[in-house]
Length: 110
Length: 176
Image (cartoon, rainbow over all chains, first blue to last red; front, side, top):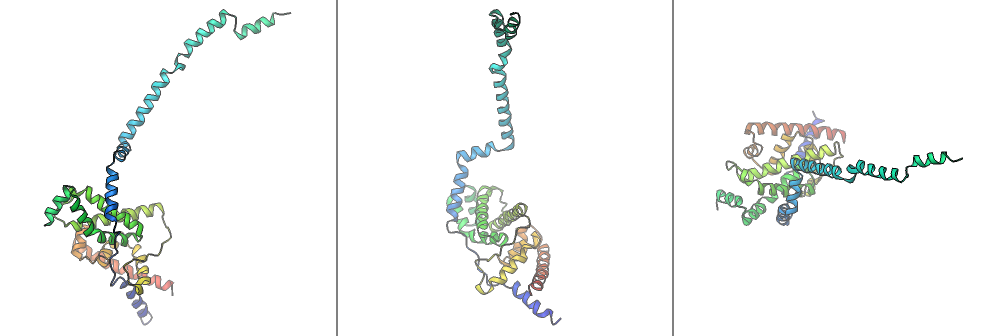
């Protein structure tokens, strides 16, 4: 017990170290900072960003972008490629531009 | 002006009333945040967020509590959120010695040891102990802030003191 007493006294000293403590003071410019933050939050761009970042809106915008992309792909010249290839093949055949024909022709030479 | 009229002005977003609220309560809110967060910069951000929240959510304020109690509650909740976030992002981060600006010079080292011990308390005990020791709130006021009964707060404070004593004995034994 004699060994414990100084230890307990020391613990009490530490526990009492908050005695006479002054309150910490906030920055004198706190109100200005708060007003600035509130004004910034009210700005159009911040509100727009917040609106767009809500999950439902973000999902809808993503889906819309995907649909627009699909639409463009379907309407792109590649979709008409078969028809154009057919026309080109006809022209090539008419003028004997087909590469296999050329090969055939060369094979007939002596 | 009585508190009811003051609240009405706050609800109508009266700038003068809001400035008065900030100027009256900023030090107590900051002191609560700094005690729990033990970091000056985080405490400044926390204080700012408390008043921004109060400005936006004044319609949620139930008038059976005093406005100070409501502000303390927001400050405590916001501080605990930040502490949890800090623990999630940096679990087991090395403890940085904290010196509260209001502690008397000759007690600075002991107070730093006590702050370190307080960090190891469970959340509820930590809040109750700090509101009593740093804000000098009565058990009734602490109960109102924490939305607990007075007897529950009394129990929390007793357990906090007992736990702190154990932590400090272990610390002193190790650092003989």
